[in-house]
Amino acid sequence: VTEVKENMTFGSTLVTNPNGGFLACGPLYAYRCGHLHYTTGICSDVSPTFQVMNSIAPVRECSTQLDIVIVL
Image (tube, rainbow, N blue to C red):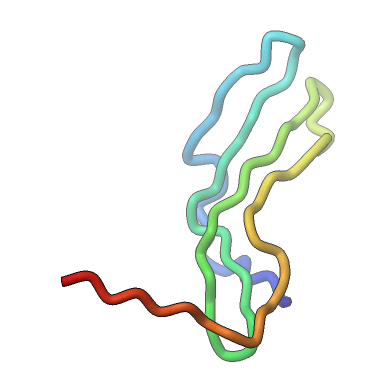
């Protein structure tokens, strides 16, 4: 898994934390698995001193199979 950070609009969503700091989300965060890019987004919990406390991003592993669903 390789992170793709070009053209990411990090910080397009900011929410204050009642304990101080804020939550910042970047919807265009992506990772590369083989030749495919998965744009899942990422959110980071940032402390009042601008230290990243925790990052939340779904799906962090490469799978060799891909499920395809066709809805008619």
